Amino acid sequence: MDVVLGSLQDCSNCPSINLRLDLLEDLRLGTSLSQTLGFKFQIYSGLQTPETLCRLAGMLLSVGAVNMEALLPHLTPSLERIFENTKSHATATNEASRLFGVVSLSPGESATTKKDLTLRVPGNRISSQIDGILEALLWDRRWLLAEPMLSRLERAGSLPSINIAGCRAALLSMAHFTVGPLYSKLSPSLMCFAMRSSSEVSQRDVPGMDYAEISPQRLDGRDLSALPRLLEVLEPLCCHLHVGIASDTLLLTKLARVIRYLFKLKQMQLDAYGAAKRLLEYVVLPAVSNVTVNPGCVCEIWSAIKQLAYCERQSIYAAWRGRGIERGAIGSKHFAVAQAECKAGSDARRLLKRVANEKKNSKHVGRALAKIANSNPLVIFHIILSQVESYDNMIHPIIESLGFVTPLAMDVLSYVIPVHLADTSRQRLQDDGINIAHWFQHLAQFTGAFYRAFPQAELRALIDFLMLRLELGESLYLLVLNELLARMGGCEVLQDISDAQIGGLAGGETLRHEMLAFDKASKRAVFKLRDVLCTSSTAVPLLALIAQQRGYALFKGRVNHVKLLGQLFDRCQLVLVQLVSFLSGSGESRTSTSQQISYHGLLPSLSRLSVKRCVETS
Image (cartoon, rainbow, N blue to C red):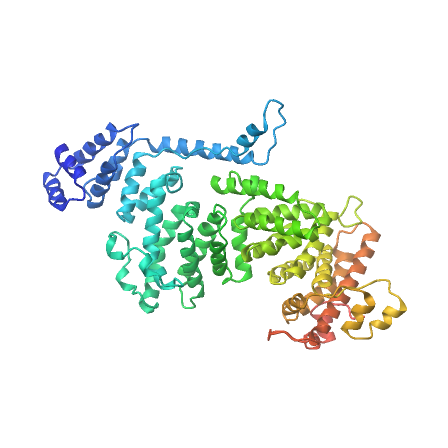
């Protein structure tokens, strides 16, 4: 028996391998074959196991000569030991992540020691014999045998696809092989010659996949019918890779283009759509946190994300954020992602110390911030908004610095702003209970300035958020709408004006701006705001909600001071005048949006406003 196994190990690629396997089958060894193979592995306990022995085990598992359950007790280290090693590695990485940005005040430490302490990163887990067998199965394309082993290792607390270079390379190769036939038709340049031919690689043991169906032409009905079976293999394969896919930006780009194509398919089944969305949510975006500066790859991911509606994009960003970011992510996210977020946060805080009201400085800082925000936009914008909430003089230089970020980062910022506005851990009123808190005022000013400078950012999410808050009777959020209409829409209202300025209001838009000395609003910003507000589903409910805020503040609000109540009444009137002025001016200029309706066409009858919308008409 040992002689036969030795000959199989020495010539696993020989033409006579099938004859030796037949001889092994004729011996009818039963469970003794697993024990003999296990004894061979035990010889190399604590030593480097030969690759030929791992390939022999994979070959015997493939033909069914041995069982993994019978072989597992002979392999070292055990699953319990692998779990302990992985846990200690994760703990050491998390401890190192907590040290990012920490300055030691100990007099005995030098600057070099502090830097080494902050940047210390533990090594990877030591390879095991189980990893060797798993790698052999993956290189041989034995997915039905490799997938249960991967799942069992992950349940035991091990991460072979990330920590072991051989397993990670084999999984990446398997993913390239799986997605390759489909991507060869979706690649912009159709560079089929750059990919491995399907005849060079074994196609055995990939369930339900018939790669002969996909021809090097455009996709047809047969290809669409093969997509669900392809996703059945591709989704668990990428989930096992998880953030380890960040080491291969080519595969990440391929996945982004495939997901973009799947989102564009109208006749795609819901299961395939859900699989594509899960790949984007649980694999692609977490892997972006570990990708080095690669704007091309991030733009490909954004081209896939922008196919979704804004509400679905917001939910994906919420899943990417998780329970916390930066140090709050330690313990809840993968330790590699938490480490990348902590490092990005430390670098961002160091860069924000150099922000100043100088154009050259803003460009330099903006480029540096864009490099960090390329991979971790959630962390960067959380830190930026925290700084803006404390110092309002940073709003203008920060806005100028955002001109270098990617479209994905810009869309993430449109998600982070409502998250900060909805923060319930802080009071939106000062300690006196009358005046609005400074952090809320600064954040509202930043919101208006941001959407004026970058009207291409997603605005519907913020408008829906404000309408939801106003529906709940939270009248303080009228300040955000006030800043948005004043800065983005150019509809500022002065409370104390002279007689000459009153006469100027009787003229057109140019005379009004000249007499009131307002900054001329950007046409792109005005058109974008009109596209969002001048619709029947937004304008009338928003007008009704603003008109109802007086009743909410007087009868349902928790207002303890008469002065605050008077300020809320005045702000309701101010914002209502702003919105009416903006909507009534929508007919003066046209945009390309066909859904835009004039102000007079939006208004319902007085009886409907009074009965259905509960608006006081007196």
